[in-house]
Length: 144
Ligand code: CA2
View 1 (spheres, protein in one colour):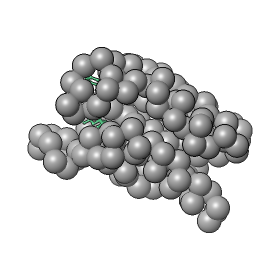
View 2: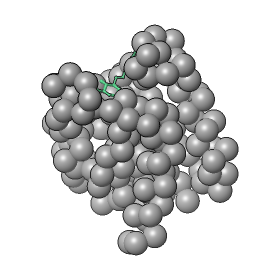
View 3: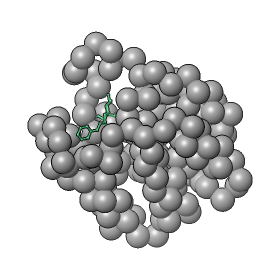
View 4: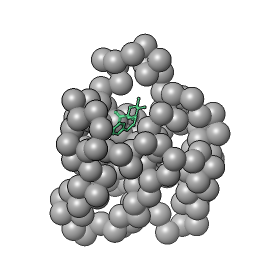
């Protein structure tokens, strides 16, 4: 089983800034947590600050070698029609995750444009949201 884990803009700075909101762990820690928690799963892990790179990654998941996507679209969550449209064309389990609780923050974070094209959203559990996201993806894969 291969799961693509996508991360959007500024998440490369995780653990280096705004620890009150996002905690002190880094994106490398997220990757390690997933690999240790799910040793039988192969993770393709990517972070990009560029919308087009993320669209390309979504399109590349259509090759048949990827079983599910778990993604934190970062700020693009609230703005990207392009990522939304790419996701709509992808028939795989798709789980959106957020480290912070997007419903307990500024009003502009309330709306997830990308989330409308995902199977579901996990938000507010720190980096454990990624672990829950993989569990949700496994659940969806087992059903399909
Ligand atoms: O809570 C999340 O995971 C978010 O997706 C993070 C995004 C934010 O725009 C979403 O509303 C919620 C921001 C990622 C920025 O990452 C930073 C990491 C460290 C320090 C500052 C920002």
